[in-house]
Amino acid sequence: MSNASVVTEFILLGIPHTEDLETELFVLFLSFYIFTLVGNLLILLAIVSSSQLHTPMYFFLCKLSVCDIFFPSVSSPKMLFYLSGHSRAISYAGCASQLFFYHFLGCTECFLCTVMAYDRFVAICHPLRYKVIMNHRVCAILAMGTSFFGCVQATFLTTLTFQLPYCGPNEVDYFFCDIPVMLKLACADTSALEMVGFISVGLMPLSCFLLICTSYSRIVYSVLQIRSAEGRRRAFSTCSAHLTAVLLLYMPVVLIYLRPTPSPWLDATVQVLNNLVTPMLNPLIYSLRNKEVKSSLKKVVHQLGFLP
Image 1 (tube, rainbow, N blue to C red):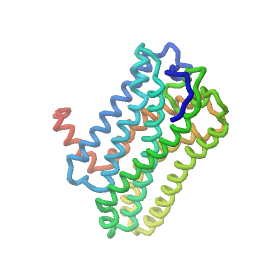
Image 2 (image 1 turned 60 degrees about the vertical axis):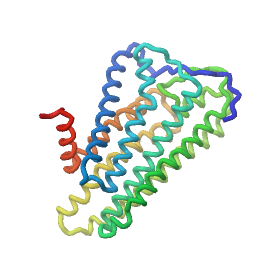
Image 3 (image 1 turned 45 degrees about the vertical axis):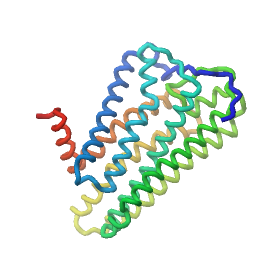
């Protein structure tokens, strides 16, 4: 990236209006982070250890759990570091890395949710051809594609942000480096870049969301053709967890990036929920209504010695 910046580091000011709450926030966020890591690791172990769960749906769920392990790890360790009384400084490269990996993992999850919706569409609308359509090769291509396009999107947004000159203020009024707060510190007119970034950040999730809606409209139509109430209930139950995860993923994107007038405190609150709470809830969402996952989880927890 070409950059004429004289700024070599930035200062993370943290969550607005939370002065003198560092100890409480440290304990709270550390608890969320630990539960997120443990929950997603247990889901991974449950799926890998059970041959019954070696299907496309759980393959994609594995990748979602991996993303949910790394996604909060982009910002949480640094946030916990300065909440414990250490330096709030972050290097220029560290700031760029935070922005890149945050959007890389976030975009990958958006694409992954779209792929998972397609998987449910094939399973419910074309059950007899499911294994042929969603074979190992197709699943591998789809999984790699989510990471590839996530990387392309994140590279574009990071380059767009850090090709600007940063030559004056270096205090980031946030708890990690993200596009809206970084553009405020740039020593140049950012109006055109803000519009390009707004379109880019909005267009990708919107496209994925429309594809998900298309898949689920076809699913609903097919399910309504099922005569038995039990059959309809079972079909909808396989999709309810994914729909809940989709809503938790897209609501923060709309609130943070697609509002005309940003609010620093609201944005920070939503980002904390998005970075820590949602990845912590995903293992619960996908396991509570799934007998196979719950059974496998019990075996894993028993083998690890947490249960007698």
